[in-house]
Image (cartoon, rainbow, N blue to C red; front, side, top):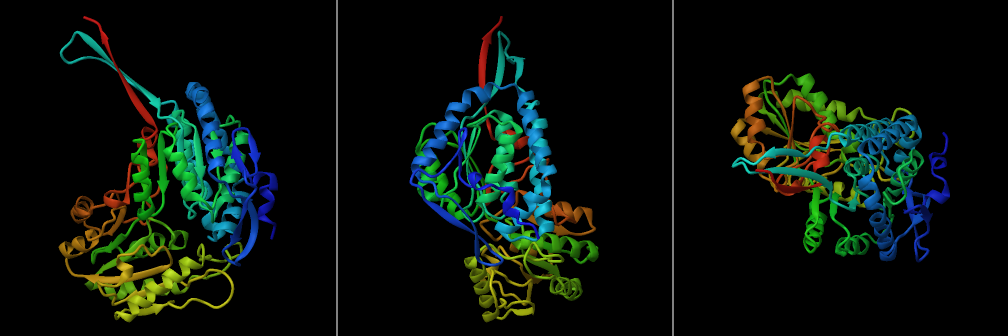
Amino acid sequence: MSDPMNVLAPEHRRLRIGDAWRDAAGGATFAVEDPATGKTIAEVANADVVDGLAALDAASKAMAEWAATPPRKRSELLTATYRALTERSEEVARLITLEMGKPLAEARAEVAYGAEFFRWFAEEAVRVEGRYNTAPAGGYRILTVPKPVGPCVFVTPWNFPLAMGARKIAPALAAGCTTITKPASQTPLTMLLLARVMEEAGVPPGVVNVVTTERAGEVVSALLADRRTRKLSFTGSTEVGRVLLRQAADNVLRTSMELGGNAALIVCADADLDVALDGAMVAKMRNIGESCIAANRIYVEEPVREEFTARFAERMGALSVGHGLDDGVDVGALIDEASVTKIDELVADAVDRGARVLVGGERPDGPGHFYPPTVLVDVPEDARMLEAEIFGPVAPIISFTSDKEVMAKANDTEHGLVGYVFTRDLQRALRFAEGLETGMIGINRGLISDPSAPFGGVKQSGIGKEGSHEGILEYLDVTYAAIDLP
């Protein structure tokens, strides 16, 4: 097995600021571990506030020239990034698996997904349009001109270390913005590699800056307090999102927030059970369940509950667990010990309240942060896992008897990111699509993420959209000029 760390030279495990790869100002570093073994795989620079502001200096200095770069040129650089990621897919995927834990097949899928954002927004870069029209009352003309919002600060999560950065960086660059990305401290290596790929693709210095740090709170706070920052985009928990929104309010920053989820997956009695099972497996187990759009609660209509549950449990129990770089592994390691402990406590709480475990339910011995695919039934409504975002390979199954009942249960949460419905009745599907309080809905489909579709939630699951045409609008302001022309 080749060493995935060979793709990221030691000099590129430092901060990317302006035209340089540099150590943190104080010389500090922190360790990155392989979650499947618990062993350190690299040391990276541990930035402080001085480094964060240096990155903002670089982004601010590069802003005017990048905004003035012809859209076609920006498009070509994004296309070059897409091609480079596609050509280097295997090495990028292996690095993702090594630092994040997901199986290699899932990591390959993430590289393809993340690269596609660069291709999509390369196409959007040349389609940013204003308008010119006669005022309704006559006498003058209305001219609108879209302009980049300015330097952007991105805070990205560990679960999709390439794709979540790509989903922010690509539209920002397409719109003419410069960027500072603070990746999760558990998975900084993939973002550093992306910065290196973009440098090699020809993206100018200062346009893409990466600041790795374990001091996220103080570094990000300093960036948001600086008036040169004009945009914040964050993907992560609702709790942290609330804190960042309060900080962003002081300078009235443009914000995009992709926050927590508590997705309900609903299987109706008239569903094609083969389709529902396939969809439920994807919605629950994609990325080991460490996804904001993972099915957190599975509601099955009573007439098919027994059959669906038995078949779903059989498929979950057949999944193999191990190091993500090993052949044949379906379920890799969770990100850290805290994640395993949280999931173990949620399962124990449900069992204490009367739930039954059909498969899994016990963490294995040995090194690494593993938890087996787990299915629970008879889960009571007061179980904590029905309120908390599980973020792991655990599936609680709850029966229902009417659409009204399950709609009320599905909506009884502060979150509103995504829902899933499986039914062969078109009118029923449309009622759920209109009635579920979510920003996205999968109908007879367990995978809804697509760079060409607007990703985002409602309620406390976020603000704004990522991907699609809507994604680039998040990085544009509009100037209106009234032109006298009798």
